[in-house]
Image (cartoon, rainbow, N blue to C red; front, side, top):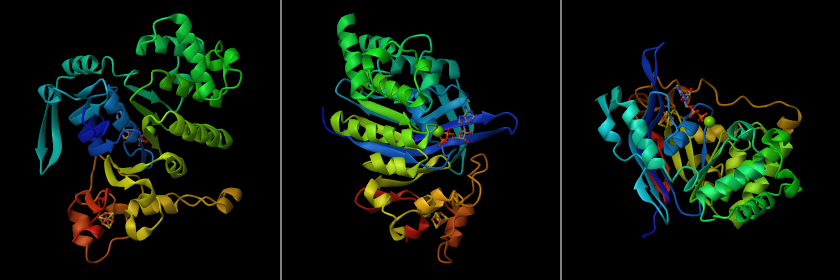
Length: 366
Ligand SMILES: Nc1ncnc2c1ncn2[C@@H]1O[C@H](COP(=O)(O)OP(=O)(O)O)[C@@H](O)[C@H]1O
Ligand code: SF4
Ligand SMILES: [Mg+2]
């Protein structure tokens, strides 16, 4: 097997149809992403920017129509090398006007059948997922230990129940659950939010996946527990080293864990590159949206006095009515006379400004 990214998303489009407005919500609108083996890619952006729909599209878990309509999701692991969206074009046709998809013809039933076939042996085995609300994602009627044991029997080479039980205990210890032997027999609702998230992380890791997708793993937990989960994920990053797609609207979480960062807005990637370059705070080197996101993080004093800065001014983009030019134009405070016409009328491409660092902004283009 030649080296290369474990996950390579190209030209991913996932739209939903809204009957009331008779139009498409362009939740994911031409996403390109790559994650190299052993690396953590952090995807950050305000709520509604398309992060979760990107992850669900990779997992074949988008059920609303029309859903995933175009693109390639290349997965390359020791066991699997395939495009998870293979044969998509057989079931979906799109009509475009000036480069934008305006109409979709999709055989949803046959597409879903194809997805289920392609994803067999991948979901839960090659790719595991951690969600925001572990209690909703785990079976409420079975003990957490039992669920991990079952997942090990289903997804790994372990065949004996006793050995799977030992492995489940190993993973519960690994995520630092106190008294793992006692917790083994607890149902998810018998655990606190933080404990349950640890159990969910143990379950996701127990299948020894090639790719872990963590969608807002700390959101909804209180602040102290959030930082403990971040510490745990940092520790796991060093000891287990699993390739990870980490999704969070919280830039501090992204900063603590990511090697690479993608900044998402209005269904597309505005900036992608090494975490230290993107999150350095050097305005001259970052996308105006990233700079605004960074500026909206409250400092300690503001947190203490509860005087939070307003998030970025203006409304999050309504992807039904995309602006003609740059998606961020209606909220951007860095438009200059030189580029104003471009910003308003033409969408910039994602261009490289330095090694591996790409920005979608006219400020960086001639
Ligand atoms: N099943 C769905 N049907 C219609 N719209 C959806 C659906 N799922 C997500 N959306 C819309 O897609 C956009 C992106 O959502 P999402 O990926 O959940 O954002 P994020 O995770 O970045 O907060 C939002 O506008 C959301 O309302
Ligand atoms: S292209 Fe123009 S509007 Fe868009 S982010 Fe850059 S400066 Fe702002
Ligand atoms: Mg989300």
